[in-house]
Amino acid sequence: MAFMVLVLAACGREDLSPLNPQGPVAEEQFGLMKLAFTIMAFVVIIVFAISFYVIVRFRRRKGDKTIPKQVEGNHKLEIIWTVIPIILLIILGVPTVQSVFSLSKDYSQDPDAVKVVVTSHQYWWEFEYPELGLKTAQELIIPTGKTISIEAKSADVLHSFWVPALAGKIDTNPGSNVNFMYFSAPKEGVYLGKCAELCGPSHGLMDFKVKAVDESSFDRWAAALQEPVALPADPAIAAAFESKCLSCHAVGDKGGPAYPNLTGIGSRSSVGGILVNTDDPQYKNEGSVYENLRRWIEDPETIKPGNHMSDQYDLTEQELDGIADYLSKLTLDYE
Ligand SMILES: [Cu+2]
Image (cartoon, rainbow, N blue to C red):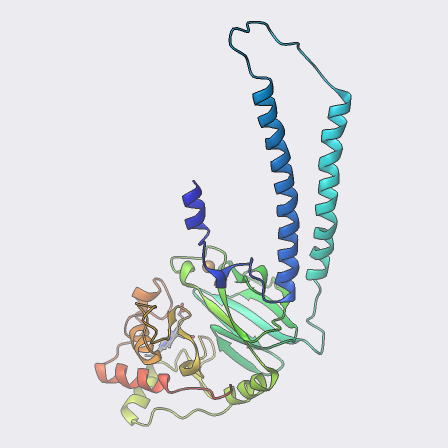
């Protein structure tokens, strides 16, 4: 049982743990966890101590055949074990209810907050900045210190948006139901996010990242994302990319907006949210951004079963190489 708990709790993933808060919202939630844990530990220790004492002190001794004195009801004890839990629940309940209200504060009309519309899809995340007229996917770029006001919804089934280091989960619901939340990241860094609601065969692969950068980098990123983007220089590759990929995807000012926006894909830290771009041998199955793009485009189905890009096109080897090379160089210079 203990082993199962450790394994199923994905123990040891520091970067995916609410026990390592990196922002004020997560810190407040961690505070509640600590309070609840302290109270529970206090109750467990006292109850176990009394139980052990009673088991040892009043055990049946050798040769003792007498029936112990039968007791029924004790006013004093009953009051004590009713009042103490009520007091403990009040100690836990008051700050919890306070946090429930303060954490559900709506920043969507706050002019200082950065507004982001999060739309979940099987199996990717879309991030739209309505005030800036921008859309991106898989990597949510935010300025440090600012409050990020999230409006969360789903394009298909129920998912849940979760960045453990920054804030608790919020469900993304189908239909017109929109959920609000907010968080902020005082420190620059990359914070891992996960879908926290079983949504299909690739649910466990529905990773994303929140990348907090300083405000001027954020402004440069937002400006760079709006620059026009040139098609591949080789006309054959450009034609293949336009007809086979831009029917769904957008780059810069070109293409369709309904699927992950690929502008700046060469600067992202992963492909499809799950293939980490790295040459670090610690990540045995990963590769450079080019290798990961090539792997993904060649066969997205083995990487994310059931995704909606699989089997939608045919590419020759040259087209595959050319498009992967083109996308790997589609970078955004902002840091
Ligand atoms: Cu999911």
